[in-house]
Image 1: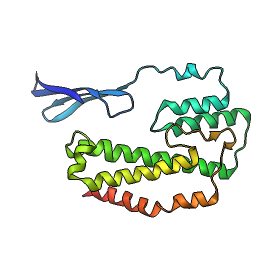
Image 2 (image 1 turned 180 degrees about the horizontal axis):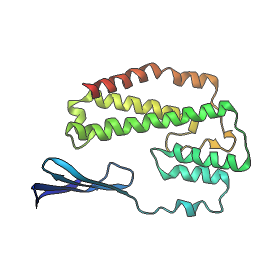
Image 3 (image 1 turned 90 degrees about the horizontal axis):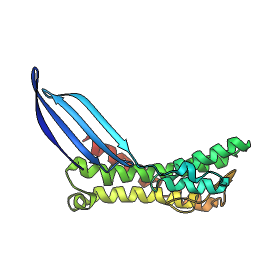
Length: 211
């Protein structure tokens, strides 16, 4: 994160301009510009930008199965959002009615992504900023329990994605009509075991913020 601030004379008081040219802990890159007059923010501009990646062109002429796998590569942290959007679009196009059990499993897959993605951002990206550390590794020296809590939470999300998506990064198990492989009941029960600790970790996280 790079930037600076400068003082600008203004009518009725002093004005300060804060400019952060490179925000890297966002999707793509970003910049932030704040104009503060007499202690009050009078202008705030946040820009998020990313170079063209041409996924719209890459998928032209591809089969539905290819498209569903390709769009998962848009993001390594949140591939399910793109993948389920694509499969829902094809199912709507083809008039495919999906069984409620499939929808429930897809919802669980999505929850796995939310868990691992939010854990990554809250504990490993945002927390160092809030606590004044350059990164999570430096923060772990003083707050090892916080970092371990985040890693444990992320691991639970990753395990859900691996079971239902075939792997935790760029999943490959979603297809039109359902899944290539549906987990056995015993496998689903197995991933349910860590949920007690998941709730405990999330509750502690909220208490940390409140305190």
